[in-house]
Image (cartoon, rainbow, N blue to C red):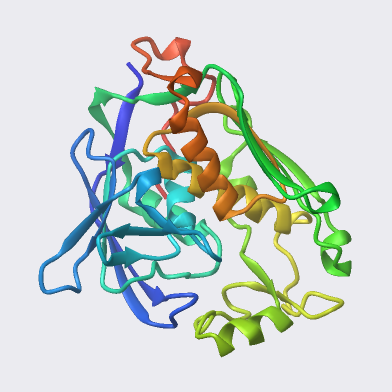
Length: 307
C-alpha cells in the first residue's frame, strides 16, 4: 500500500512575513491520517483552524491566502509547495500571525524543516486526484493570453513558460518541465526564489505590501539587471519559481494530483481558477489509491531522506 505521510516530530522556525513585515513563529506538527494540512492561528484568543482546500482560498493577489470566516493566513504557497514536493499529507501548521514567514524566499527552508523533523509513513492509503479528461482555463487574448491546463498522466509532471520582456529574465531559460517521477524537487525546484522589480516594490510598499521583502529573501531587479550580489541559484530560476508556486497552489486542492500540468504566464489566480474548474467537473477526475506500490507512478513510494 502506498501510505500517507506526516512528520516524525515537531519543528519550528521564526521569520517575517513578506508583505506584512511582521515577526511570525511557525510550528509544524504531526497529524493523524486523513487530517490533511491544517493552518492554525494560535495568536488569537481562541485558536482558529483553517483546513486547506480550493474553496478556502479567498485572495490570490501576489500570493495565495486561506480564510475561515474573518481569519486569514497569507502567502501559504511556498510551504504548500514543499509539502507537495516531499509528499507530506497530514500536518498542523501553528502560526502566530496572519502570514507565513518568507524565510529565504524559496521553499528550501521549508524542505529543511520538514526533513529535519523526519517524514514517516502512516497506516492509511495515500489518495490521489487522478485526471480522466483535460481541464483548462484561459484569460486574455493574443500576446497577453494566459492559460493553465491539467491533463491525464500516470504521475505528476509540470511544464511552465514565462514571458516577462525584461533583459535579466530574457537571458535565462523561459520554459521548464519538471517530473516528480524522474527529477528531484529538493535539488531542482525548491531553491528557486520569488522575484520582483524595484519599481513594483516601491509601489507595493506605498500600498502597505512587500514590507518584509529584500535582497535576502527575493531576487530583485532594476530595469536591466539582477541586483543580488550572489546572482541566480539556477540558470532558469525565474521560471522554476513559477513551477514552485504552481505546485503549492495546486496542492491547495487537498490531495496530490496524478496529472500533467502545463501553463503559460499563469499565476496564483489562474491556478486557483483551474482547481475550481476541475472540481466543477466531477466527470473529469476520480480519487484513487494504490494497494500495490508497484502500480503507483515511478518514484512516488520513496520517502524523502531525513536531513
